[in-house]
Length: 562
Image 1 (cartoon, rainbow, N blue to C red):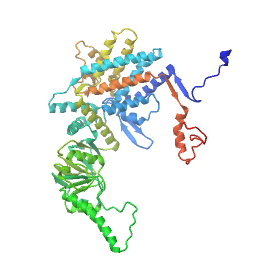
Image 2: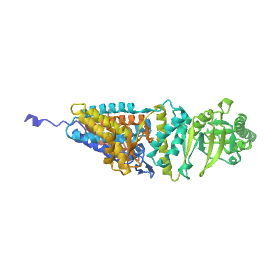
Image 3: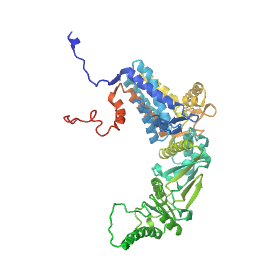
Image 4: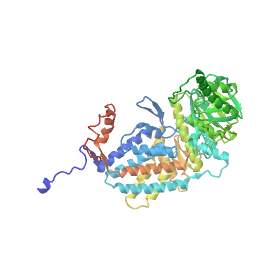
């Protein structure tokens, strides 16, 4: 009787939603599988594209996993983890974003029946971590180094890696053309880690084949005043002056008041302003520079002044373009025109203004330091060029990673099948439940070749059986066999130059396993009802005036400060 009279303990605020235990974990796994299903069809050379239309009316066509995940605006808290691993894969290695989401989704799908049967998630997590560690060690063992090759050999090997990445993109039809362009661009910046040293400029019109690489800097002609057309448009071995100041007559910025007793005094103030600007322009000319670039405006007076003296000028140059010109030409950006010495001037072999499609470009080529390159992309539609830019970004990242971590593995699902076989074999020597868990991890790895077949319209069961048979050969000669997208059978991926840097696979398996383990380790989700409506309230409270929110969120007069 006494126990019936005990009051109910209220721990959380009224309306708080708590879900825990097995149903909660299954719900999280289902959410992650739903996210993986969204990007599933984008994998591989025959992958489909997604058209995403946002609330602002922007349309994006992409098959890049990270781009799709960013644009999806996932709200489920557990599924957001998959969005994060796609972003981290993109920033770390640039490619394999779809792979990492698919693997994480498949690991959870394989874990789901065990969870439903009452297996403790920690047992699964322990086995998954062991399997992940073994898989990564096996990748390092199977990886082939491209170190110590001659420059030409290395270029062709890196072009193969870039072509593998581009084969699954929208511009896959011209992958050889773009792969060599990407390798040239990465070699141009040398050991410089700054990705912004490779500029990508987009010009609608023409075909993909009209795209070209500038070993130097190219940027669109900036806004110009009268007198610009009288300036020379081509120079050989010019000196280049880079500025961060305005070269135009400016009215007094401060609210100054000047009292004059004689009208002639006013003329002296006007003359002083003209003298200041002419003094600046004279110093620019005396420096010996034939090209003057500034991040701020160069006015009509200065434009005409430079035109009369056969000097080219451009104002309002974008900051990143100015920095790339500085890096390429060896110049330094100045905030003053006083004491301009030769050491701070840049130089290049050829400067010219060229027409590209409907735009005019200023092109600096033959730069002495050469630590920059610009790819000018052409194409029919804006969305197409945007996707081409994202594809080239992935390829550039891959080539840079392959140059630094110079080991590659066979693509086309070959490495995944080999890891799967290795883990199946290893699991036979393990007693107890963990044998089943490692087997499920091994089975999950087969999702990559299976999905490659499904996306290309082949019979996945038939191709996977052939691959299993090939990889099971005792001598290990089948270890490099993967899906042949062209014939619908299997082939030696390494011999067909379907390569990817080992770091891509290592990172993908690491991130996918961590994400799966993280989701498996969550056993309760608590949703605060206030947090759900907080955003709506904040939006509604914007127009209520200063005191509008006092009743709800503000402190009253006698309320204690928390």
